[in-house]
Image (cartoon, rainbow, N blue to C red; front, side, top):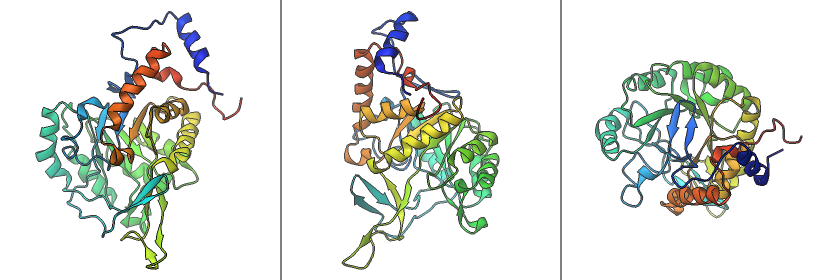
Length: 329
């Protein structure tokens, strides 16, 4: 199954790996994207780039993933939009945003000046929406390392079916964005029974990696008022409650396509959570809901990860990837 840390350590020593004070054990490559560490702030949990700058240094993280933007301004769903649940929260914010043009003109220059590694996230309601957004991403600055395609959105041209719930629509919408000048990642939905097949379609369509997973569909009802707690009815569940689902999703896709980069997300709140994702097959890890409880959680985890590796004489954290292609050997 997974290699034990003792075996990993011995293997690296046999290869001549030594601990070095000037070596960064967190250096990360996700396809052609190189980052200082595997930790990213997940889309939707840290705003569009300036909201957290007063409480934490975004340049510390491997990359900051912008809250998803469309080609048009979008108001989002009716309030209430957030509700705390056991081991997480459920939201129906509805991708509220100022529009991609506004962000490119007003917010991105600030992030460039602050030397923050950015992953832009785009969404749409039609294939044309994604294509138009991609047109605006033909000449992105080096600060933007990748574009994450949030395709867990209803396609109004296909009876409201979510793009990422279909092999065909996943392939179609990704192909419509091939004019983007930087690597693309597809953020996929866990609310399917054929995730590996859909990830394969995303790869075939041209993305360099996939982000697993988006929120899990759910609902919370106020039994006193006799109606859902969220203004939109249902919403997306996130936080520690979904981490086992996310881990298994990463494991399954990595087992089927071990050379296809995966960014793991879902319930990450500690160093151990990050290591678990990497052992399951993730090249990078995004922190989402935990940012609401502690905006500085990412920096704490980065420091903890580095110490964890140094204490065990692990040259690079990505050596922890398991070697099995099935849950049981």
